[in-house]
Image (cartoon, rainbow, N blue to C red; front, side, top):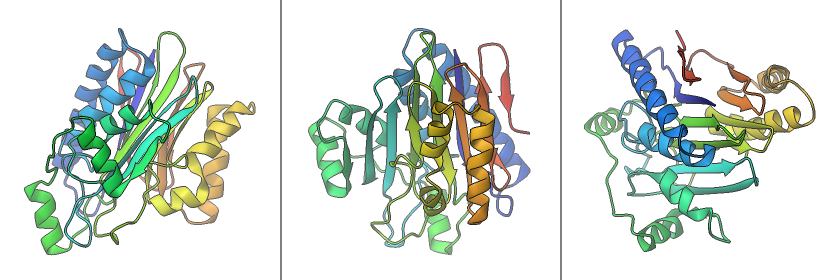
Amino acid sequence: MKIVIHGGFFSESSQSDETKHEKQSALQDIIKKGFAFLKTHTALETVVYTTTLLEDCPLFNAGIGSQIQADGKIRMSAAIMNGSDCKFSGVINIEKVQNPVLVAEKLLREEDRVLSGQGAKQYANSQGFESFSTETDERRKEYNMKLKSSKTGTVGCVVLDRKGALAVATSTGGKGFEIPGRVSDSATIAGNYANKDCAVSCTGVGEDIINGALACKIVTRVTDGQSIESAFDKTFAELNEIAGFAGAIGIDSKGNVFQQESHPKIVFAAYDGEEVTLFE
């Protein structure tokens, strides 16, 4: 059993050493809770649970603490994918829910499994999700000052469970100040992908991740026989050719964990029940 999470990138120009330490401490706490949950739950259940913890932490740009768009509103995206049956579900630009990943989880049971905008919110309401403002004072202050700190702060979780099943979840509050209606990579197979061989979650500039088809390429290459390290290296080499800004975490079916970024530094933690590995 293994679990890997990320909290997006450190924004070196705007975040103090204290904030970086707070993020690392939060990841360490969250990943231990996620692993404890994994002991009695599936990979799919665990990625959802762990991502809700990340969404509920205002240090990260997902759920509570999401970035504010150009028109002053918060719109979030999230997706999950179950490696066992390759089912993908997600919400795009959903407003006023506390945990977008939980709405994505509900959609796994539906025939129409990716919803956007008002349709996503109406579905959430129909499933009993109460309206909830994820805005924080800090995000409003950033918006009013037209700053973009933590602009690539997506969160994600990949899990290998005790039965060898893989799953992934990714959630984001967007890049901040984007044009309303802009679609991030998080609820696409470019940013969030898993099958029985590998699971990958991405963070960074959504347009670059989509241009590079990042998560899907890595997983496909592992499925075709490449090692997870080789698959990451090849895919990021292609991303570098287009000057892409991204990072990713992944686990393969053998339990090999890998993470890579085109620009330092991704906020990253891995745990196998014995020792938490944090990015230093």
